[in-house]
Length: 318
Image 1: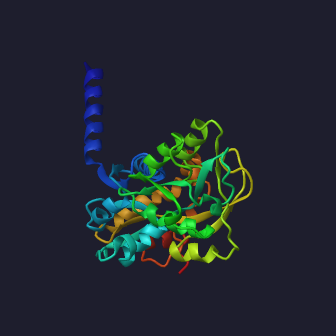
Image 2 (image 1 turned 30 degrees about the horizontal axis):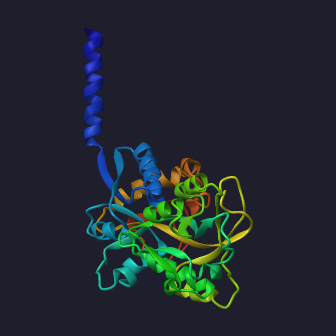
Image 3 (image 1 turned 90 degrees about the horizontal axis):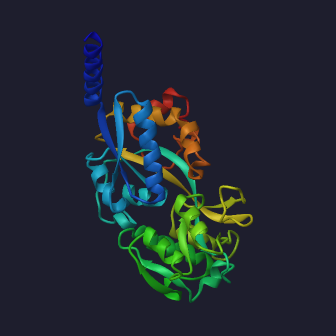
């Protein structure tokens, strides 16, 4: 009887603790690299921030959750620096929108992106893509229509030089490559969908090299603000990198709203900062991640709770 009472008391205490935990959300997109990032951050914060549970909230693209993060209805969101800058400045995809509540919470990692083709393809450089089939439209992920234009510019091309095959988003474009219906897609080095395409396609896949010194090199950087050229070497985690390859690098950002309390932001960031080892072990996507880079100066305003936390651990270098 006494054991039963003890068990009931323990269960009641656990239930009370769970009920008292603060549940917050992070905007995400299912089946993408952003989805992978949101999942591991949610796990790390929920496991290590006492009394806080972080849950991914999947939506139909980053542009769908930027407004709700700005409004404070979802506490955090993830986006690359290109799309984040557009939102902060009201340009590009966020032209005419007022997202003035947005604040940076953390710089997460340096991402490596590029054009992926079938390994048995005769396409050896970006200029060879002229006349080839490429996914187009991207109604659910319009940023990647901009990325296609900017990346093709490196080879002196635009989407007008391609045979467009309608794709709603990145996931559908990857399916089209696996089905042999397009000749090239955009994807991230080391991402799970990239590894899956390499496995599913009989000949494997290969990233194309960007010309970082050619006559069109600067045009790509001008069209995609915040990106830079980044070299990647072959490794066991990067099966589609067949030799030293120049890719497009850019940072991924964790952003929040100024309406979210300093305490919530700092508590979540401490868990992420302390969880570096677990985060890096979760996926090759995080190869370039380091907690000491979370406060990187990206010329966008940080949340005061983030600034306060970064000062406390000595990485705020303004």
